[in-house]
Length: 216
Image 1 (tube, rainbow, N blue to C red):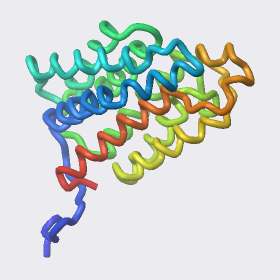
Image 2 (image 1 turned 30 degrees about the horizontal axis):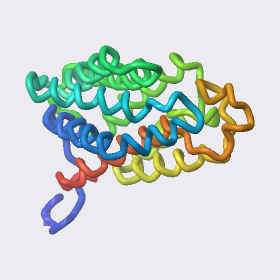
Image 3 (image 1 turned 90 degrees about the vertical axis):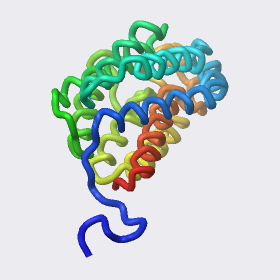
Image 4 (image 1 turned 180 degrees about the vertical axis):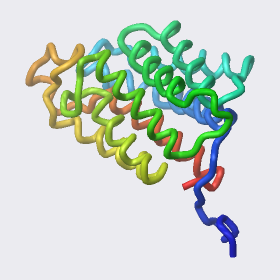
């Protein structure tokens, strides 16, 4: 039996632009479903607008990709990143926009990419986010989910999802050292970071999109 012939078997495959379009469309739907929860989390330690801002941004991304689907995976991410930067207020737009744009540029013009290439590209995006925001793991930011997610993605999409979710939950006992939440000092302890939560949501949708294609 050759690779991928077993029923239900997860295999390594390459992905085209359509895969990333489906992921971002699914992410837009997920953000819309979870917008109230994200805003509730943000109301405790932020500006109470995280869910609203991301919903607006990812809705705009989905609409853009539906009208003008780019031809390569890299171009999809670059276009999505630019759209987020132009439509999302606060810190979320520049941070998520930077993540996607830098990842897209790292993918280059390849028409198809593998999971390991995606991991490397998202790693470049995460590094750019860290540089932009001056944060690192442990500061109670989106990086607490993104960094372990990228490491997990080197193994599988499922591992990326699990690592991101664990990273988001791990922000609860942390004291924020960056962003709006840092102004609260010790009062930020006991709350889950909204940025880490939305980051975990995106990687959950990435894993689901990959699973629908039978990809490991």
